[in-house]
Image (cartoon, rainbow, N blue to C red; front, top):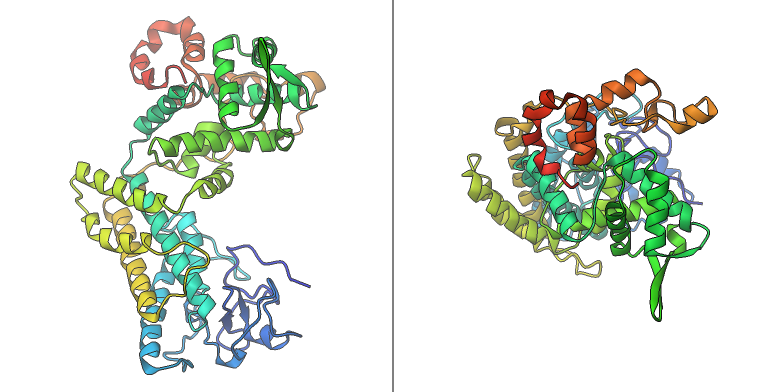
Length: 483
């Protein structure tokens, strides 16, 4: 029976016996499927197959080389050289070059702290997505054909993420958000701010979750009437644009009627808030990608939810929407960005390496890479990651910015109904809404929170009583008008 794999951050310990890897009884051995297990546990297997995905182990366990990249991360003694069984001396030379590249790249996963092989991934020059992709590469077994295929794919994935990171480093967050909402509005859609959008989606669900079929007009009127008690600025136009966003996301099954309005019914797979919200978020991300915008998971979480705790949710949506062709397109976008900035870090020198990685055949049925191809990919990845780290450390303004707000610092513009009606809130500190009047006042007086989460009409409404004091800020707020 397959064993459940460990979390990706637990890559410094054996996922079977949970002992930290060492150079004695718990040497890390990576398999062709990229799972790494200590040698002792491998010898105890009842059948010669990976305990996690049941992939057959074709090479004798004693002939599989120890993963020295992991040994160096746990501070264990690393063997200077290991004999490997390959077809020729030329292949062994290629293997050694690739092995050294991987071991040097693995050093970017330091500094490491924590027990039982669990790594604390901060501080680090690399972002969490880059670290995760690097962990995937480090666990590839290069003497196995399947391992080499996986290593090339991991190299391509690292290259694609590197381009995204470099584009993000050169972007202006304020201009980015203005461009995003402009792109959303250009498609007849609208985002009303985290709190209002959440309520609007829940009311759409309330009206249609039982399979009811309503005309667009009736659905919009229902949502507006329910919403305007808490959000007086709610209008048929703005809610109609939210419904249009869901329509673009193909959440509705539409039934046309002769000489009458079409009926809209929620598809069965979207009759839960989680499913509907994911499709809603994916549509906005898709619009951003169509407009050529690159937005980090942290920025997405802040823009769509008003917090930083939805990073993983947004990252999964971004990954799912990535197409194989987007890598080459991103390289072209990076080149244009560097032309605008003058490229003080000489990042344009990375372009040949990025193009090499972008040209890797992404088809799962593609032929296995030759040793020459594998070596060129590993060398390209090494140069590329080194260039990214050097840029972040020496040229990036963002590396010196003030840390972002901690999770749960949400934009709270109204009181919690559960607290008011039931005397308690099951969400506690994670609640999107205010639990005290002081909290509400403090949050609504925070202009930076308002400019990143609320529509202009609500901003003007909050500031109406102190209009003169807020006048200097109105000009900087203009990119958010109509959000």
